[in-house]
Image (cartoon, rainbow, N blue to C red; front, side):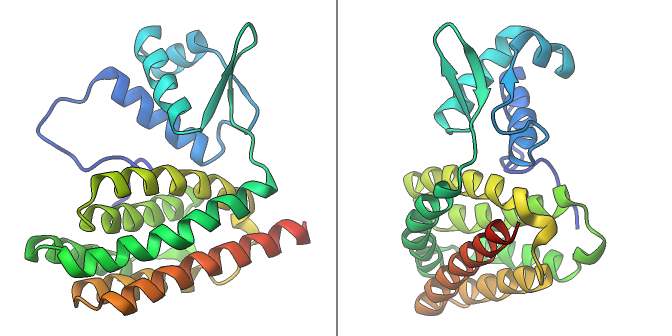
Length: 227
């Protein structure tokens, strides 16, 4: 399966700005915890690492702060947002309401072209070798499916909200992914969800989306408290 930067937008004919490039690169590092929760973020050092000037990095950090992935304090600097156990409850509470809504709406309003794209993604999932995939590949795969569903729902405000909460959920997941069993089932759930959306089954898609989020919270909670 061809995977790219976690959460990256679909390619467009428009030229990607340096700020967009910095944003995607830093977001990937934050989501996969290459930049650890609580780590200080120095724009000069980040710019040097990315091979660009400080201005696009600063713009990227402002966007990441709006995403709640970084936080800035006057006279102290900018830091990667910490991941607290209580975040799991708050994030899951919102996702359990909005993920089923997006899945149901996608099943209802998705165009024929969008359903064809979802079928193509579904085929990629069937060929995804999760047993030998890296953590980054697994997280990227998960993000691709969720973002495809959000886009298919056809509501840009719902899509934007869910992207932000999925980002936060991904960081929590990354903390315990090496302790989570049955990741193959996680991929299979995505395959089934996409099928219900493709077939236009609103209720089934909604129920599967909710089950997926509930299973995620239960698995992560179990791993956190077993540590």
